[in-house]
Length: 266
Ligand SMILES: Nc1ncnc2c1ncn2[C@@H]1O[C@H](COP(=O)(O)OP(=O)(O)OP(=O)(O)O)[C@@H](O)[C@H]1O
Ligand SMILES: [Mg+2]
Image 1: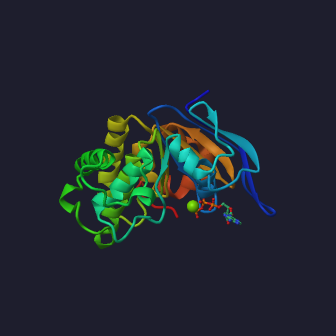
Image 2: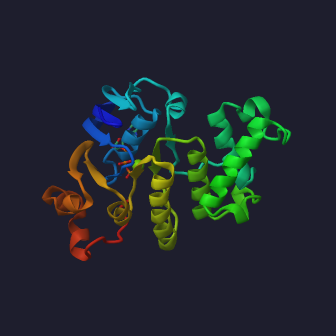
């Protein structure tokens, strides 16, 4: 069994079939992209994987366990981390405190039981501070560690959110439109960062994106959804050449520029 597998995933909203018999596989240390036009079912599939959407049919297996019926927080404990399309940080906490939250969630020394301001002597807090410190350095956030999350530009908020997800030590990280609302420069930096995240933390990534150029650049394997079905799956080069994809999705883009057009389809 692969590291992660969704099999025959089907979701209906009343009379509308949002996903039908969708199969998606992710291997260890692989970066997988999920693209598709508006309404194709990307978010619905992402939610099935993270556990906020129930599947009407199908199975989801992660690390040898069937997680189809597990709630999101238990999936998190098994190593499934995620970010949100709309950044969800604690706006009044500092960057460092937001990262500490992720560490405490993993260590089971939740803020809710202990409070954030544990005495420095607390071992759990010392460990969390050390781990958050490593993440601050890794993500280049040390200079803004004491700034409130709400004061930061969106690009930096997204980095903090990725940091908080990494603090939970996921083995599979799900990214929901991590580039939405950030500049082209920041997108380029994010690609570099995600590559180093993969090697430094030895995790797999599933990247749901509107930004085709980013997906083609970053991913080892790409799935294209269309009307709730997998239209194509393969390496970025294979997918870009696939006639069905060109017709349904990339047509005007492929003509416009090669090899990786910077077109945002939303
Ligand atoms: N909660 C819901 N209730 C009813 N219909 C829904 C619900 N969520 C999604 N849909 C419908 O399911 C289909 C797939 O939606 P989904 O949001 O998964 O697409 P998407 O690929 O993420 O689109 P976008 O690129 O616009 O984000 C769409 O037709 C959408 O209108
Ligand atoms: Mg969506």
